[in-house]
Amino acid sequence: MKAYLELIKIDIKLAMRQRVVIFFNYLFPLVFFFAMSSALKARSTPGSAAYVLTMSLVLGILGSGLFGAGVRAIQEREMNILRRYKVTPITSGPLLAASMVTGWVIFMPSIVMLLAISHYWNYMPWPDHMIVLLIFVSIALVSFRAIGLVIASVANTMQEGTILVQLLYFPMLLLSGATIPASAFGYKVKILSDFIPSTYLVKGVNRLLMSHEDSGIVWLSAGALVITAIVGWTVGMKLFRWEKEEKIKGSAKLWVAAVLAPFLIIGLWEARNEKPAQPDRGVNQRPPAVKMAPPANAK
Image 1: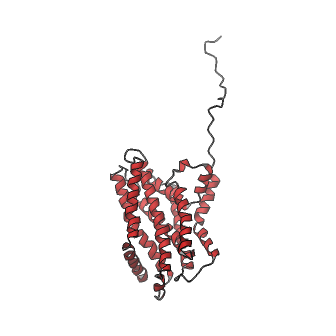
Image 2: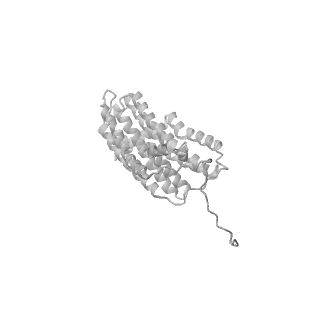
Image 3: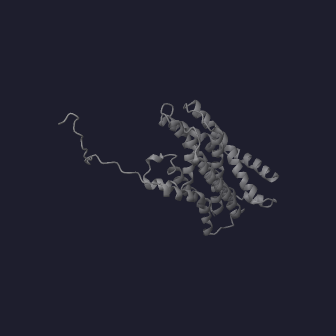
């Protein structure tokens, strides 16, 4: 336990010294939040405040997980920083756990700040399940950081890791309903979005912000995120490398699919129950004939 606490303390100090961490965890979400609030007129349009807050939270969580954990871990291995820990009597477990806890400690104040600004600036009511919302967001943050660490474990170079991160980041951002409303998706895109982890992050946050009671989708999403965090941490320990000279086989990249397996299972279940929307009747189609009843006084 002492090794975990010491590594967490060191990791937080190193993260707070980096201007990039401060910018992407605090300044960038604020700029994005106020820009989208102005564009969508969140102060006067019902429902827009919660939508803007959801976008800001998802954007921050994805950035913290895929870039903050994944890309940073690759950078530390490329710069031989991880090699310095190799001589100490610790395993990769404390390092991975420290990265997850550091991301949570740094990002949670930003979430509380965005909730307060949404309430006092955009007049959004306080969520009825504030504690559940914070717990759900915390689980999501740790889960996506686990995905980022798995990507860092299977990438042999910075270029390869950046490509893998972008291949996951943009579909998660664009097809989850965070930036483009899910109501605008067609049937096939809707089916595809059911296999994306961030879709359930968006659904859970939306339900907790806009509903007076939580629902099954919140607990289903939370369960899948917890499993992903556990599997991601386990796979990260298995594939962890201290030095950049250590290369990993190309087949090891399939472990990314293992981390995403809970969402693949949920996506198959959702796709099985999903039904395509019925097409609207065209304007040029003749309405069905209606037989009129004769008047009551007709002879």
